[in-house]
Image 1: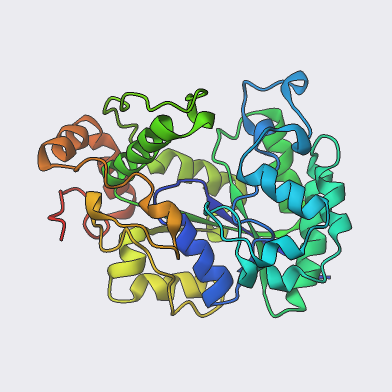
Image 2 (image 1 turned 60 degrees about the vertical axis):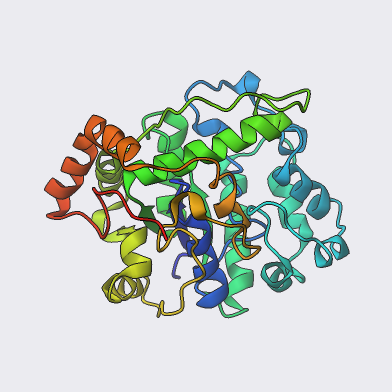
Length: 331
């Protein structure tokens, strides 16, 4: 009997992960990601600094978007979803949730009752898969938190999902400096405005000092190639997928064995830098992006500091993706 299909996308945010999920779920009906595009139910276990005594049941993890999700779904207040206008990108809209209307809430209840476990994860996504394939989808989907795969828990998780699912992983990347700058702007906005980001009194704080944490994608890609098999992993740059001649879309289609033609709106392509404006179709992408300009001086300063990330990509793939390695003139 064929295994359920599980599509994981990398947790490299600010690289158009939301438009990718909406492309796969809404536009092409390939994978359904359940109640939220970024559930991360097991993420606390993935952090090497966490011990079992530090973990809490999902229902006790505090406030925020996922807690609101828990309250709505676990309490069976389904009708509340119909009028819910998401202020966060993590919660799916009515069109996303409609296929789950007849999916028994008991599956979600078992998943979040008590401490999350790998077996609960497998049971939930197996049941979700059986449900959504009847609605015309080919796979279920989830976000995969990219912590170092060396802890015992992560090893057990990887071994289990390889055993239980037909796993495919998409690594969506973006120019390293521009991705890091978008993350900085988003963190800066949250630090100034949100209690959950170190602002308990709700007063406006001084802006975060400019400091970028630039990712070298290649070591992580190589690690996961070894774990899951290179044939089960697809790496694509955001710029190529949304802006090239269609080659990247065809390669993604071939990888999934499913036509990917109509991509969801992506405010980062073409990259507008600090000129990104709010759009309700992808509200997360504009968050804080207009706070500061990524000037040529800032770009080249960080590119020179993290040149090794660009060199590693070029050495591995032969060339850099579209627009990488040089500043853009924003329109």
